[in-house]
Image (cartoon, rainbow over all chains, first blue to last red; front, side):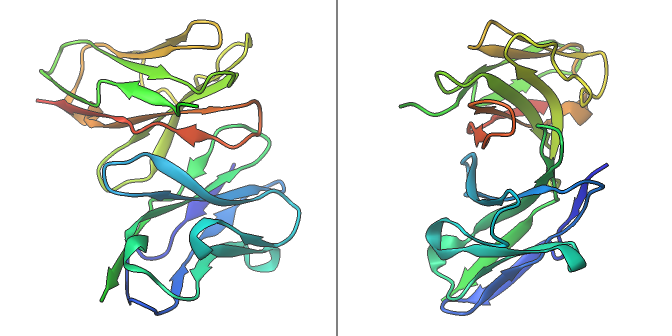
Length: 112
Length: 113
């Protein structure tokens, strides 16, 4: 069975500061891992995905995530936060199935 | 091309009534998924359609929930005898096929009074 844990339901950063959103996964087989972003009143948008190629994955809007098997982690980072990054972020895992197992989400606030 | 569309965008119903939620996937996408997002929680998988294969219904929470898909197009999620705990945002996603990226619609916000 697969599961995802997102540490911190809320993260607040200042504009220009580093963004770090944590995600740990559990999977009995090599996983596919995803980060989705949900802006207010909008659907989920894929930020990036890991599918067993390069462990450092670059996504849209300057975000990237690194797959660390030894730590079972897939943390999302961005060097410099923008006001427009304020949203809810979901980590998800998929392994040998097509359905996505989502974490509970992290709401990112960016202060000027 | 158009993305995944869902209707209605909002639905308010009374406890005990049946509701139907519609999803129009991206044209050409053979896979279609339904998820539920309760307030303050992550998304829960409900059901998955892939081409002509039998759907994966393993996420449906009770027999009050059912879904149909016509070929590789529209899908309808039906909730019978709605309960207050059914209140949630119901999200539909589609993908080109198995293990492909899922693209999500804007969701239907259901409120059961």
